[in-house]
Image (tube, rainbow, N blue to C red; front, top):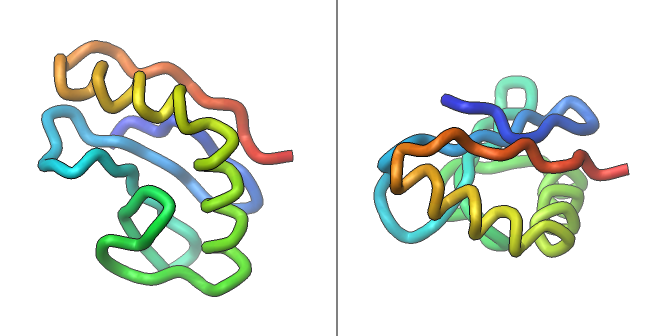
Length: 83
């Protein structure tokens, strides 16, 4: 699973040719979730979820571009971490 960002112990990744709707995967310790601004499946601690949502809002255009690239089986771009 190609990693696109990493911050505060969370790893954000996207799969090539993954199912709709557009989304990313987040691993944080033993937690795993997938979603966009809302969790589609899995769970994260409340604070981790808030950080991921903030990051996703800041990088919405880049996430959309990486989704387009993933669907076309093109290399994904790294996205700056939340600071």
